[in-house]
Image (cartoon, rainbow, N blue to C red; front, side, top):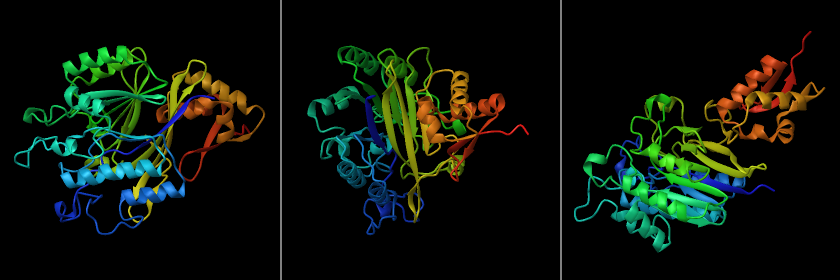
Length: 395
């Protein structure tokens, strides 16, 4: 049996009190709302989804921007709700980090430091282990291993207390040097997961990547020199999964989109609000890091729904981690069809498990190759996800 672990992921909640949004256009999750019916907001809908599916996870991951514009009351509310979610999912721990909206960078409250509201949270933020929390605030990150997972939690908003650094995230040279040393001392685990808020490499879609994390590529290089890492980040309200730049052991980078934040510009025509269940596993004889991401989007009045291929670049079920030859996989799929004219997608995946670990672009390339070279067409269900494979008639 391959080792497996599941992460429930929600980022960029941007919760705030109603008084901060008099027109009702800025916030979807009110921290002081007087109505919390099952579909009144994304969070109450999530509890309904967990009961309906039902869902469970090993960890709850939140890559920052819990609140909007550093509202202290909303910050406390979300932190409590994340731990409530942990209990409902039977998860071991909440793994969270700081977003730029969680830091009072402009010091609205006289006599406080920008991170003070975060440091006052109970249980302690970002993790209720004093040595790890102290390390996070002192050095910009912490490392810990819980069960099969080694977590690296990075504070990419560490410099947001300096007004010249408010427009993007960063990882300092000091942090990189210390992190490199700590990774050498900290044993590699079955799974290695880094959580940060800002995007560490260019997020090219829709020209959203201009504010890339300072030293982001250096950060990814440090990770790739250590082990196979999954990097989970927020900030960009546009979901995406891809392999980082590099020549060896490139990290898999998951951009989460936003759980309940505002969508603006061209992104509003593409993205929705998202909740993810990331199922990671060590696959095959070489114990490669692979997995499947299941996602739902939130519809006001209806709740969280599987949206199929409505977002073609980030469907509601996608894979990651397959680094082999698409052409070879095409030949294997064609061979698995044998004399059958029709087979269900699930049957083929059972015979060729690599199919489950294809990113959307790789899956599209495979579909094209199957049709062109072997006359095999992949039919899709009403949501747009693969459902059957059929051999095209030559008559």
